[in-house]
Image (cartoon, rainbow, N blue to C red):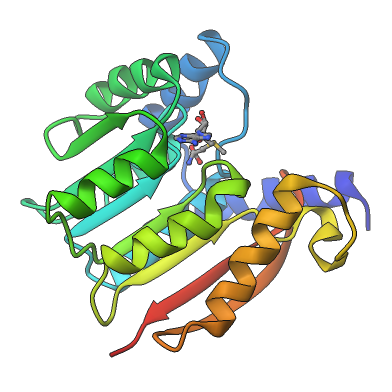
Length: 222
Ligand code: SAM
């Protein structure tokens, strides 16, 4: 099976299970029109995030890496009436596109976008006594994942669900000598997760329209 087949199957699955949605379509077209890179999650992955937030009955969500707000809309729509989502973005241009997209999605009232390097913002959230968050989604620079994990633990409670995207990287994650900073970031992250007694975790390889990658899923214990 090749990339073409993976994309075909994603089209088939998404066509069946992820109904066309004018708001989400708008988020993607407005992001593309603004020149943002198409590195958002795929529609069926966005729905997975949404379902995880629904299953865990998340009232508070932290997202690291907003881009144009596509995954933010999927997650934000899972929130109950008084739920809150905090999303962190380093690029002010991306954050501006996300703000406009979240407004169009009717979600701006539930979402706080923090602009700045995520490690700095997460440190500020910890200092400000924010959290605990019910669900945390890591999807920014992979070199930052080890630090994001550390802050995530400070912003969590027993039962918090942590999802980290792009942990397989075309299979390169299994190569200890890749020389690739993103791979090394993901490997350190996974090793820290494995060594963290408060976390129970797994990671799953995925193929699809976005290629060959995968995600890690962890839950904070007591
Ligand atoms: N979650 C988004 C979605 O699925 O729609 C995609 C996020 S994209 C893969 C990663 C985003 O993280 C980019 O918008 C990038 O600007 C941002 N980013 C990268 N490094 C960052 C950092 N150190 N601090 C904050 N944001 C960062």
